[in-house]
Structures are given as C-alpha cells and as structure tokens.
Image 1: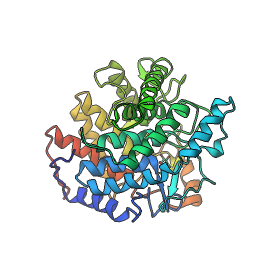
Image 2: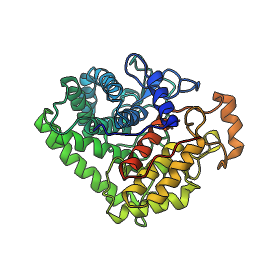
Image 3: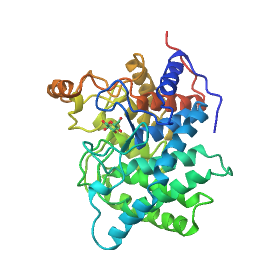
Amino acid sequence: MTMAVHLGPMERVLVQQILDAQHASGAYPACESFSAYKGYSWFRDGSFIAYSMSLVGETESASKFHNWVASAVTAWSDRVDGLLGELDGGAGPSITGMLPTRLSLQGEEVSEGWWNHQVDGFGTWLWAIGEFVEKGDEVPTQWIQAMEVLGRYLCGFGSLPCYDWWEEHIDQIHSSTLGCVIVGLRVVERTQGIDTELRDLARVRAEELFSILMNEGVHDGHLTKWLGSDAVDGSLSALIAPLRVINPRDPLSAQTIEAVTNDLSVGGGVYRFQSDTYFGGGRWPILSAFLGLAQIEIGNTEAALKCRDWIRGTFEEGIPEQDSSMLLAPDHLDTWREKWGESAHPLLWSNAMYLALETRLQEIGVSHETVS
Ligand code: BGC
C-alpha cells in the first residue's frame, strides 16, 4: 500500500512529530502536551494514525502500533468470553467490565475517570489492519488472535448503546460507531486465518448492522448522528471515506456530505455537532479531513481542496484538535481552559488525517503546494 508520496516541509514536520511521539511500546499518544490526554493512547486515534502513517510510507511505525494493540487485546480473550456469557445469560454486562477506550502508553488499562465503553475504536483498528495488510499477505498470528477477540466482542456488543466518537451520549446507538463496527466486521469476514465460524458470524452481523443503519440511521436522505435522530455529526463523513461503509455512488453519500456541509461546515472547517461546547466548540481539522476525503469520492475536488487549505491554515508547529476562531459557544471556553489548560495541540490524529487527505489528493493528481 506504500505509494510515492511527496512530502513538503509541513508534511515532514507532521510525520516527524508522530514518529517522535510514538512510545517505545508502539503506542501513539493522543497529545502529550495536553493535560487530559497525556500518557494515553486511544484505539480510535491510534488506528487512524497508523492508517495515515502507512499511507506516507512509515509502515514500520504503523506495524509497531498494531503489534502493541494486538498484544493488549489477545490478553482479553477470556474476559470477552466472560462478557459474552453474561450477554447469553440475559444479563446486560456492566459498563465497568467493558473493554477500555484508551490505554496507558505502556499498554495498561486505567479505566477510572474516563468515559469507558466506546466500541468504534475496535472496529476502526480491524479496518486499519485490513488496509495495512496487502492482498494475499499472511497476517501475523498475534494479529489474527486479536482480530478474533475483537470480532467476537463486536459480534456481541457492536450494536449496543455506548459512548460515541466524542465520548458522549451513552444511551444512544451512534451511526458513526455502527459504521466503524460494520467495517471492522467486514474485515474479520474476509481475513484468511480467522476461525471460519467467526467469519460467517461476522458477515451476518455486519449485514444486520448495516440494515439497522439504513433503516434507523437515515433521515431525509442523509445519515444521522444517532439512530432515530434527525441531526448530523461531523464524524459521519468518515463512513463515506476512508471507511467506505457507504458506497460513494449511493445518493446517501452525496446527501450526507451536503447535510454535514450545510449544518456544520464554515470555510472548509467542520464543527463536531451544533450544540458542541467543548473548549467553546470550534472547528476540528480531523473532520475537515474526513469531509475532504468524502468529497473526493463523490468527485468534488474543489470542495476537498477547500478543506485541505483550511486545515493548512491551522498549522502552527503541528495541527490542533480544534481551531479557536468562530466558536459555537465561546462562553464555555474559559471553563475548559481552567479545567484542563489550553486545548490539545498538536493532536497527532489531526496531523494524521491531514496527511491522509493530502496523500489522497496527490493520488488523484492534485499537485502538492508547499508552505512558504
Ligand atoms: C475526543 C475523542 C478523542 C480523544 C483523544 C476526545 O476529546 O472526543 O474523539 O479520541 O479526545 O484525542
């Protein structure tokens, strides 16, 4: 999957920041300079970072991350069986027992004090493995074992309510989370070496979840923030690209992109959702990158370039989690600053998604522009 990507000065800084920050264990920290994230690696952030790092040719770095995840996950095999047993027994498993959302950089589980139980990251990791492994390549045994553990977990728990990409609304089933679970299960289904019964089950569950998404996660022709809602969320673009849960040619793709653009995008920057108050609710570079990637898939290169250029404008020794101009809820900014200090910068996931967008633009022949 390595391509001849041209990295300009800015892109080289972004890649180097990720390489420098990667822990010896293989973990990608979310942001070491931000108090609330320091010392932790999220499955969600890390999987997208690994994806982008292999796109820019840093496959060894991506492979180290995957090894790190695989070694943590294989140790959870009995625990997952126990949780599935509780489910079969009719009792809903307790949230505290569910698999963690983030790990310490050493790979330890520190679940207290965070919004645990977010299943999207496991689906995204499976998807990232599917992207990483070249067709026909043998998948390392430990990765297969980890994929089986997470495959079983997602077959059992992938459609239960849980926290979303933003670690909110545990009472809902979120469309973006479902999308991540679906693509993860699709990878389990097609991976040689995984137990065949599990592969069959993954296919059935992926199809079931896809019909739930189509029946309950669509309003007025576009995907919705959660099942039964009529609102959109900036994360939905990811289901079109790079995750490809939805075929870009399906009108649902264009209509979702249109709804996200109309409701959440200003000048190429994208808000998470309308009522966001986190650090005042600014526009998030990762979401512009996802929107840009989705726009490319439906042929709107100009719109994708607008997203790319907006993200470049946020660059200042790396790309931040969010841009602090044009806040949706400026009155909330100080409260967060008092609590946790300045918001995350650079956020390694932001660096990574910009790199993914830039790589894709180069792939379709849009030339690279350097920053003076
Ligand atoms: C975001 C998550 C992200 C985490 C680490 C949280 O504020 O809501 O999506 O995974 O930060 O970057």
